[in-house]
Length: 337
Image 1: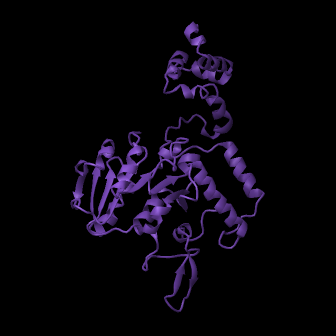
Image 2: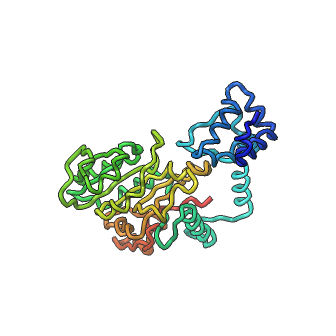
Image 3: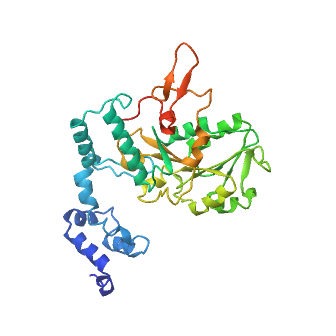
């Protein structure tokens, strides 16, 4: 029996009717391991979850049509990778069978498609080429490694990271240690206090100088461990205090609209696309604000590879790197199929 107060709440009532008309969902609700209709209905009445009303009537139909490869598996590891759908694979197959995609270093059509992909990535995260560069990588981990290899670590500098950071972020402290740069950690909830009170940080090696040579702060947009989200509204104050901000958005970017480059002033942002789309794996990006790009410019001793130089000589040390940051950092042939 649906109470009148529920009937009068039109979005809930529409969801109830749709649920009643869905044979697959009705049978699912009758299974012993499901929470039951009343529990789901109560869940959807909460203001924080009402936006999921559209989800309940169709989730089992979507699983049957698009995720049939799951079988009886209950998949919970969305922090590790998303699931690809049948429609996604069909569209990818159609694109490959109807296109001739060659190496972007020698195919203008593939290079144009690659550049369109950069625009789509920026559009997805509400950014533009006017403010950001997109460097394609194999994932967030390689993006972090690239940043660590090119960031100007200096003796007397400071590197801080949130205590719930991913292992790949913690690996950056090896670069800091090699450069005699002090490093430490802070609680995610203390981030808004850091701009005015550096004592909230707990240093592991070294201490923060009065005027550090460089300051890099690494924070997760959303913790893989607890799901806690960082208050990104305080980043502008931190930048005023000369902090360079590295945002690990590998998990945050999985929620539509959660990563907004226009409102988030992080200097460097890393994402993994397989965590968002499920397929293909081994694809991510390093997003760099233009005003932070000079920090990653090539040094004389930096390794270079195919596609990263304008001119080079095998019989001398002559080499001219490409001026575009994405071309310089994307070493070798990029992922083009």
